[in-house]
Image 1: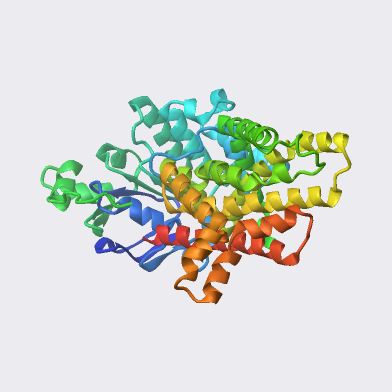
Image 2: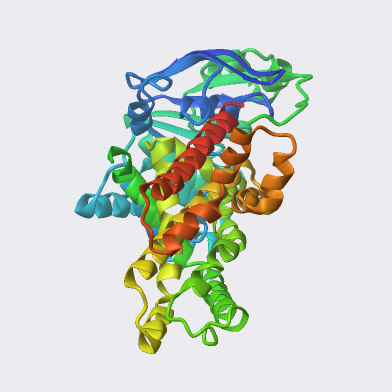
Length: 245
Length: 248
């Protein structure tokens, strides 16, 4: 279970995240929706322990990310925005490295790596340097890294960004496959994606939650019944001034 | 050292591999070896000196390291920051200290390997005469510690920026100050107005004095402590910088 309690983040004078709270249970896929610069990535970076919150905290499977950081990080699999990976390493080398940092060694390490490779369909490129891979494979390598330790909480920042329609289908199918046993939080600005995989949606604008419900509930808010219209009404006038996080 | 356990070891191995699989490593090693050989044999006239010692070899190390070590260190954090992998690394269950130590010792191992490859000069000297083994061992130890101190400076400047060029320039500047701090022109400049304790304090900060006594084969605990404390201080500052850059 993931519980986010009143998270705040200030970057100097900019109050990027202003009191975000929510709970996600196992089996839920929470879609984090919002315009660019609304605070989605910053919130995720605080939940995953990359940025220390200015106030508030997140409880990851019983571990406080602020006071019990290492234990909380063990519970999380995280795919950062644009899937940053060490380009000069091969897929196998990279996944072995992540496995070792996560405390797997020897036979267990190799079994974890092989399992993640199979799950993310990376067999063909396993010995290729990551920087030579297509965007879709690169993204899947990032995903493999995130699910390698079978984390109870999986957090993904725009997991399908920049992928072609076929690759998007593959990644979505993988997320749906894992959904039952995990807490999944993903951010996106693709509305069809919410319909396709999310069981619940949080809309965030100006660093605050402006809506929280199932996709169906959200659609019901607009006479047209379209998610686009709801999103537009909720976040109108939200021109990002500065890219934060 | 409990810090240097699993995750730090994994980072260490990754960084060592990053060095040996990149062309930078080979450029570094070749330039280091050619440059030290050139300075020793052609500039310092190793043969003409008619002395079987390695002073004319070690005396150049502070200057060669001044330029080369920042080049080897500049990628350590700046590149993680530029490519965004720092976000990946620091959301793994690893402490910042483990990451810093893993990277530091990996880069130091690489520098040690480059230093070890100068062994033919030891063989040459032994063939030509009967050098003082203690002085040679002290010289190598001093050189290794010196490279570690430069490296720690480079690690700090690399943590300060995502731009490797800025890291390099800053690192050379700080290294240059540490190198010349004890020289008469610097202390003379201070002596006009600063109290004596400050002049002595600045002079004691110099790499040169500490490196000099080591390469003469004088193993003084104070010199060892000096280099170790420079390294510890620089790494600690790098920690503070990285922590602050995350919070901001």
